[in-house]
Length: 353
Image 1 (cartoon, rainbow, N blue to C red):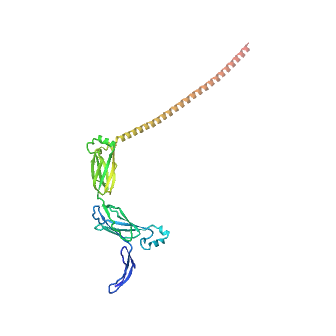
Image 2 (cartoon, rainbow, N blue to C red):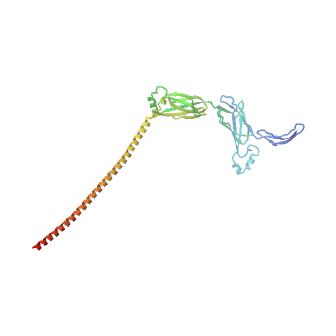
Image 3 (cartoon, rainbow, N blue to C red):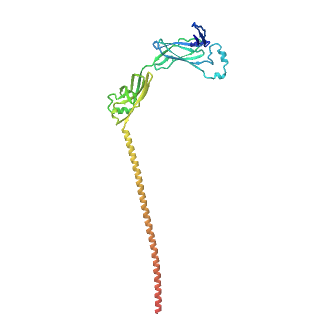
Protein backbone atom coordinates (compact mmCIF):
# COMPACT_ATOMS: atom_id res chain seq x y z
CA UNK A 1 0.00 0.00 0.00
CA UNK A 2 1.10 3.57 -0.66
CA UNK A 3 1.28 6.36 -3.25
CA UNK A 4 3.06 5.73 -6.56
CA UNK A 5 4.04 7.74 -9.64
CA UNK A 6 2.91 6.09 -12.89
CA UNK A 7 4.25 7.03 -16.36
CA UNK A 8 3.51 5.06 -19.57
CA UNK A 9 6.40 4.49 -22.04
CA UNK A 10 6.04 3.05 -25.54
CA UNK A 11 8.09 4.21 -28.46
CA UNK A 12 6.13 5.82 -31.33
CA UNK A 13 3.24 6.77 -29.02
CA UNK A 14 2.28 9.88 -27.12
CA UNK A 15 0.20 9.47 -23.96
CA UNK A 16 -2.33 11.67 -22.22
CA UNK A 17 -1.90 12.34 -19.42
CA UNK A 18 1.86 11.99 -19.49
CA UNK A 19 1.92 10.68 -15.92
CA UNK A 20 -0.32 10.02 -12.98
CA UNK A 21 -0.08 9.62 -9.22
CA UNK A 22 -2.03 6.69 -7.82
CA UNK A 23 -2.85 5.46 -4.37
CA UNK A 24 -2.80 1.73 -3.78
CA UNK A 25 -4.87 0.60 -0.85
CA UNK A 26 -5.17 -2.63 1.03
CA UNK A 27 -7.00 -4.28 -1.82
CA UNK A 28 -3.86 -4.05 -4.01
CA UNK A 29 -5.66 -3.41 -7.33
CA UNK A 30 -6.14 0.01 -8.95
CA UNK A 31 -7.28 0.77 -12.51
CA UNK A 32 -6.10 3.89 -14.35
CA UNK A 33 -6.61 4.83 -18.00
CA UNK A 34 -4.24 6.59 -20.45
CA UNK A 35 -5.04 7.74 -23.97
CA UNK A 36 -2.36 6.80 -26.58
CA UNK A 37 -1.82 8.50 -29.93
CA UNK A 38 0.67 7.15 -32.47
CA UNK A 39 3.11 9.87 -33.57
CA UNK A 40 5.92 7.87 -35.20
CA UNK A 41 6.21 4.81 -37.40
CA UNK A 42 8.59 1.99 -38.32
CA UNK A 43 10.59 0.68 -41.22
CA UNK A 44 10.69 -3.12 -41.69
CA UNK A 45 13.14 -5.05 -43.81
CA UNK A 46 15.66 -7.85 -44.01
CA UNK A 47 19.40 -8.28 -44.44
CA UNK A 48 20.71 -11.20 -46.50
CA UNK A 49 23.87 -12.28 -48.25
CA UNK A 50 24.11 -12.48 -52.03
CA UNK A 51 23.05 -16.12 -51.99
CA UNK A 52 20.00 -15.33 -49.85
CA UNK A 53 21.24 -16.46 -46.43
CA UNK A 54 20.08 -14.27 -43.53
CA UNK A 55 22.71 -12.02 -42.00
CA UNK A 56 22.36 -11.60 -38.26
CA UNK A 57 23.71 -8.83 -36.00
CA UNK A 58 24.03 -6.29 -38.79
CA UNK A 59 23.75 -2.72 -37.50
CA UNK A 60 21.45 -0.39 -39.47
CA UNK A 61 20.77 3.31 -38.95
CA UNK A 62 18.23 5.91 -40.05
CA UNK A 63 19.28 9.56 -40.29
CA UNK A 64 16.33 11.91 -40.70
CA UNK A 65 16.15 15.51 -41.90
CA UNK A 66 12.98 17.50 -41.33
CA UNK A 67 10.89 18.50 -44.35
CA UNK A 68 9.51 22.03 -44.25
CA UNK A 69 9.48 23.90 -40.97
CA UNK A 70 7.80 21.68 -38.44
CA UNK A 71 7.57 18.27 -36.97
CA UNK A 72 3.82 18.43 -37.52
CA UNK A 73 4.15 18.09 -41.29
CA UNK A 74 1.78 15.38 -42.43
CA UNK A 75 -0.43 15.66 -39.35
CA UNK A 76 -3.53 17.81 -38.80
CA UNK A 77 -2.94 21.52 -38.28
CA UNK A 78 0.57 21.41 -39.67
CA UNK A 79 -0.07 23.91 -42.47
CA UNK A 80 -1.62 26.45 -40.09
CA UNK A 81 1.30 26.16 -37.72
CA UNK A 82 3.77 26.63 -40.59
CA UNK A 83 1.96 29.82 -41.63
CA UNK A 84 2.59 31.29 -38.19
CA UNK A 85 6.31 30.64 -38.31
CA UNK A 86 8.45 33.74 -38.44
CA UNK A 87 11.25 34.25 -40.94
CA UNK A 88 13.82 33.98 -38.14
CA UNK A 89 12.53 30.53 -37.22
CA UNK A 90 12.87 29.35 -40.82
CA UNK A 91 16.57 30.28 -40.78
CA UNK A 92 17.35 27.93 -37.90
CA UNK A 93 19.36 24.78 -38.77
CA UNK A 94 17.16 21.86 -39.70
CA UNK A 95 17.17 19.37 -36.80
CA UNK A 96 18.04 15.74 -37.47
CA UNK A 97 16.73 12.54 -35.96
CA UNK A 98 18.67 9.36 -35.54
CA UNK A 99 17.61 5.77 -34.91
CA UNK A 100 19.47 2.48 -35.12
CA UNK A 101 18.77 -1.21 -34.74
CA UNK A 102 20.29 -4.66 -35.26
CA UNK A 103 19.11 -7.53 -37.45
CA UNK A 104 17.93 -10.66 -35.63
CA UNK A 105 18.92 -14.27 -36.20
CA UNK A 106 16.64 -14.46 -39.25
CA UNK A 107 18.11 -11.30 -40.77
CA UNK A 108 14.97 -9.23 -40.09
CA UNK A 109 15.05 -5.75 -38.58
CA UNK A 110 12.73 -2.96 -37.45
CA UNK A 111 13.70 0.70 -37.17
CA UNK A 112 11.27 2.35 -34.73
CA UNK A 113 10.42 5.96 -34.00
CA UNK A 114 10.56 7.51 -37.48
CA UNK A 115 8.47 10.66 -37.65
CA UNK A 116 6.27 11.75 -40.55
CA UNK A 117 7.50 14.88 -42.28
CA UNK A 118 11.10 13.69 -42.16
CA UNK A 119 13.18 12.24 -44.97
CA UNK A 120 15.31 9.36 -43.70
CA UNK A 121 18.42 7.76 -45.13
CA UNK A 122 18.34 4.10 -44.07
CA UNK A 123 21.76 2.44 -44.44
CA UNK A 124 24.12 -0.11 -43.00
CA UNK A 125 26.61 1.13 -40.40
CA UNK A 126 30.29 0.72 -41.19
CA UNK A 127 31.75 -2.55 -40.02
CA UNK A 128 35.06 -4.38 -40.36
CA UNK A 129 33.21 -7.61 -41.10
CA UNK A 130 31.05 -6.17 -43.88
CA UNK A 131 32.47 -4.54 -46.97
CA UNK A 132 29.37 -2.95 -48.51
CA UNK A 133 25.60 -3.12 -48.83
CA UNK A 134 23.47 -3.28 -51.97
CA UNK A 135 21.91 -0.82 -52.36
CA UNK A 136 24.13 1.46 -50.27
CA UNK A 137 21.03 3.22 -48.80
CA UNK A 138 17.27 3.68 -49.05
CA UNK A 139 15.91 7.24 -48.95
CA UNK A 140 12.39 7.39 -47.53
CA UNK A 141 10.01 10.27 -46.86
CA UNK A 142 8.00 9.04 -43.94
CA UNK A 143 4.22 9.20 -44.03
CA UNK A 144 1.72 8.26 -41.33
CA UNK A 145 2.28 4.57 -41.96
CA UNK A 146 4.93 1.88 -41.62
CA UNK A 147 7.29 1.15 -44.50
CA UNK A 148 7.76 -2.50 -45.48
CA UNK A 149 10.29 -4.33 -47.65
CA UNK A 150 13.32 -2.06 -47.13
CA UNK A 151 15.80 -4.87 -47.76
CA UNK A 152 19.60 -5.04 -48.12
CA UNK A 153 22.08 -7.48 -49.57
CA UNK A 154 25.48 -7.29 -47.87
CA UNK A 155 28.95 -8.36 -48.92
CA UNK A 156 31.14 -9.62 -46.14
CA UNK A 157 34.67 -8.25 -46.12
CA UNK A 158 37.13 -11.01 -47.05
CA UNK A 159 39.50 -11.99 -44.31
CA UNK A 160 42.10 -13.10 -46.87
CA UNK A 161 43.41 -10.53 -49.34
CA UNK A 162 45.48 -10.61 -52.53
CA UNK A 163 48.43 -8.56 -53.77
CA UNK A 164 49.43 -8.33 -57.42
CA UNK A 165 52.16 -6.19 -58.88
CA UNK A 166 54.51 -5.37 -61.74
CA UNK A 167 58.27 -4.93 -61.39
CA UNK A 168 59.94 -2.53 -63.83
CA UNK A 169 63.65 -3.31 -64.35
CA UNK A 170 65.78 -0.56 -65.93
CA UNK A 171 68.07 -1.25 -68.90
CA UNK A 172 71.23 -0.60 -66.88
CA UNK A 173 70.04 -3.09 -64.25
CA UNK A 174 69.38 -5.70 -66.95
CA UNK A 175 72.90 -5.21 -68.34
CA UNK A 176 74.46 -5.50 -64.89
CA UNK A 177 72.45 -8.62 -64.07
CA UNK A 178 73.49 -10.20 -67.34
CA UNK A 179 77.14 -9.33 -66.74
CA UNK A 180 76.91 -10.73 -63.22
CA UNK A 181 76.22 -14.13 -64.79
CA UNK A 182 72.80 -14.61 -63.25
CA UNK A 183 70.67 -14.53 -66.39
CA UNK A 184 70.39 -18.32 -66.43
CA UNK A 185 68.40 -18.46 -63.16
CA UNK A 186 65.82 -16.32 -61.32
CA UNK A 187 67.85 -13.40 -60.00
CA UNK A 188 65.19 -11.13 -58.45
CA UNK A 189 63.10 -11.92 -55.39
CA UNK A 190 59.92 -10.16 -54.25
CA UNK A 191 59.29 -10.42 -50.51
CA UNK A 192 56.26 -9.54 -48.39
CA UNK A 193 57.52 -8.71 -44.93
CA UNK A 194 55.98 -7.64 -41.65
CA UNK A 195 57.77 -5.48 -39.11
CA UNK A 196 57.37 -6.03 -35.39
CA UNK A 197 59.55 -3.47 -33.66
CA UNK A 198 63.09 -4.09 -34.89
CA UNK A 199 62.32 -7.61 -36.08
CA UNK A 200 61.46 -8.34 -39.71
CA UNK A 201 59.45 -11.41 -40.64
CA UNK A 202 59.24 -12.61 -44.24
CA UNK A 203 55.60 -13.66 -44.74
CA UNK A 204 55.87 -14.79 -48.37
CA UNK A 205 58.33 -14.47 -51.23
CA UNK A 206 58.57 -15.33 -54.90
CA UNK A 207 61.44 -15.39 -57.39
CA UNK A 208 61.14 -14.09 -60.91
CA UNK A 209 63.33 -13.39 -63.89
CA UNK A 210 64.12 -9.87 -65.02
CA UNK A 211 62.12 -10.64 -68.19
CA UNK A 212 58.94 -11.55 -66.26
CA UNK A 213 57.90 -8.61 -64.11
CA UNK A 214 54.49 -9.81 -62.85
CA UNK A 215 54.02 -11.27 -59.36
CA UNK A 216 51.13 -12.10 -57.01
CA UNK A 217 50.50 -13.15 -53.43
CA UNK A 218 47.17 -14.83 -52.63
CA UNK A 219 45.30 -15.12 -49.35
CA UNK A 220 47.18 -12.74 -47.05
CA UNK A 221 45.54 -11.84 -43.72
CA UNK A 222 44.47 -8.25 -43.15
CA UNK A 223 47.21 -5.99 -41.82
CA UNK A 224 50.14 -3.76 -42.68
CA UNK A 225 52.88 -5.12 -44.96
CA UNK A 226 56.03 -4.03 -46.77
CA UNK A 227 56.77 -5.32 -50.27
CA UNK A 228 60.41 -5.17 -51.35
CA UNK A 229 62.64 -6.45 -54.17
CA UNK A 230 66.09 -7.90 -53.57
CA UNK A 231 68.71 -9.32 -55.92
CA UNK A 232 70.29 -12.64 -55.02
CA UNK A 233 72.93 -12.11 -57.71
CA UNK A 234 73.99 -8.58 -56.78
CA UNK A 235 73.53 -8.95 -53.05
CA UNK A 236 76.92 -10.64 -52.77
CA UNK A 237 78.65 -7.86 -54.73
CA UNK A 238 77.62 -4.80 -52.78
CA UNK A 239 81.13 -3.38 -53.07
CA UNK A 240 80.78 -3.27 -56.87
CA UNK A 241 77.14 -2.34 -57.51
CA UNK A 242 74.65 0.12 -56.10
CA UNK A 243 71.02 -1.13 -56.09
CA UNK A 244 67.94 1.12 -55.92
CA UNK A 245 64.65 -0.67 -55.19
CA UNK A 246 62.14 1.41 -53.19
CA UNK A 247 59.89 -0.50 -50.79
CA UNK A 248 56.09 -0.28 -50.95
CA UNK A 249 54.11 0.03 -47.70
CA UNK A 250 50.57 -1.39 -47.73
CA UNK A 251 47.67 -1.38 -45.28
CA UNK A 252 45.56 -4.25 -46.60
CA UNK A 253 41.90 -3.47 -46.09
CA UNK A 254 40.48 -4.00 -49.58
CA UNK A 255 40.09 -7.42 -51.15
CA UNK A 256 42.80 -6.70 -53.73
CA UNK A 257 45.79 -4.40 -54.02
CA UNK A 258 47.82 -3.82 -57.18
CA UNK A 259 51.21 -2.10 -56.99
CA UNK A 260 54.06 -1.10 -59.29
CA UNK A 261 57.72 -1.37 -58.27
CA UNK A 262 61.05 -0.44 -59.87
CA UNK A 263 64.53 -1.98 -59.77
CA UNK A 264 67.65 -0.05 -60.77
CA UNK A 265 71.34 -0.89 -60.45
CA UNK A 266 74.57 0.88 -61.43
CA UNK A 267 78.32 0.51 -61.01
CA UNK A 268 79.88 2.07 -57.97
CA UNK A 269 82.98 2.74 -60.16
CA UNK A 270 81.13 5.65 -61.65
CA UNK A 271 81.05 7.21 -58.24
CA UNK A 272 84.75 6.38 -57.76
CA UNK A 273 85.64 7.98 -61.10
CA UNK A 274 83.63 11.02 -60.19
CA UNK A 275 85.41 11.28 -56.85
CA UNK A 276 88.80 10.76 -58.57
CA UNK A 277 88.00 13.49 -61.07
CA UNK A 278 87.07 15.72 -58.21
CA UNK A 279 90.39 14.95 -56.50
CA UNK A 280 92.34 15.78 -59.68
CA UNK A 281 90.48 19.06 -60.05
CA UNK A 282 91.20 19.90 -56.43
CA UNK A 283 94.90 19.05 -56.94
CA UNK A 284 95.12 21.23 -60.04
CA UNK A 285 93.43 24.08 -58.25
CA UNK A 286 95.90 23.73 -55.37
CA UNK A 287 98.86 23.74 -57.75
CA UNK A 288 97.55 26.85 -59.48
CA UNK A 289 97.18 28.65 -56.18
CA UNK A 290 100.66 27.56 -55.09
CA UNK A 291 102.14 28.66 -58.43
CA UNK A 292 100.48 32.05 -58.20
CA UNK A 293 101.95 32.53 -54.71
CA UNK A 294 105.45 31.54 -55.86
CA UNK A 295 105.21 33.69 -58.98
CA UNK A 296 104.09 36.63 -56.89
CA UNK A 297 107.06 36.26 -54.53
CA UNK A 298 109.51 35.99 -57.45
CA UNK A 299 108.06 39.08 -59.11
CA UNK A 300 108.34 40.94 -55.83
CA UNK A 301 111.97 39.87 -55.38
CA UNK A 302 112.86 40.90 -58.98
CA UNK A 303 111.21 44.26 -58.47
CA UNK A 304 113.27 44.86 -55.37
CA UNK A 305 116.49 43.96 -57.27
CA UNK A 306 115.57 46.33 -60.09
CA UNK A 307 114.90 49.19 -57.67
CA UNK A 308 118.22 48.58 -55.88
CA UNK A 309 120.15 48.48 -59.16
CA UNK A 310 118.51 51.67 -60.39
CA UNK A 311 119.35 53.43 -57.12
CA UNK A 312 123.03 52.40 -57.29
CA UNK A 313 123.35 53.72 -60.86
CA UNK A 314 121.88 57.07 -59.88
CA UNK A 315 124.36 57.32 -57.00
CA UNK A 316 127.34 56.59 -59.30
CA UNK A 317 126.23 59.20 -61.82
CA UNK A 318 125.88 61.74 -59.05
CA UNK A 319 129.37 61.04 -57.73
CA UNK A 320 130.86 61.44 -61.23
CA UNK A 321 129.02 64.70 -61.66
CA UNK A 322 130.40 65.98 -58.35
CA UNK A 323 133.96 64.81 -59.33
CA UNK A 324 133.86 66.76 -62.65
CA UNK A 325 132.87 70.03 -61.03
CA UNK A 326 135.72 69.78 -58.43
CA UNK A 327 138.29 69.13 -61.24
CA UNK A 328 137.16 72.26 -63.11
CA UNK A 329 137.60 74.38 -59.99
CA UNK A 330 141.12 73.01 -59.42
CA UNK A 331 142.04 73.78 -63.09
CA UNK A 332 140.79 77.35 -62.71
CA UNK A 333 142.88 77.83 -59.57
CA UNK A 334 145.98 76.39 -61.32
CA UNK A 335 145.52 78.82 -64.28
CA UNK A 336 145.16 81.73 -61.92
CA UNK A 337 148.39 80.76 -60.12
CA UNK A 338 150.22 80.28 -63.42
CA UNK A 339 149.24 83.74 -64.63
CA UNK A 340 150.30 85.34 -61.35
CA UNK A 341 153.70 83.60 -61.58
CA UNK A 342 154.19 84.87 -65.15
CA UNK A 343 153.41 88.41 -64.04
CA UNK A 344 155.85 88.17 -61.12
CA UNK A 345 158.63 86.86 -63.44
CA UNK A 346 158.07 89.73 -65.90
CA UNK A 347 158.37 92.27 -63.09
CA UNK A 348 161.62 90.71 -61.90
CA UNK A 349 163.16 90.82 -65.38
CA UNK A 350 162.18 94.46 -65.80
CA UNK A 351 163.89 95.40 -62.54
CA UNK A 352 167.10 93.64 -63.53
CA UNK A 353 167.32 95.43 -66.79
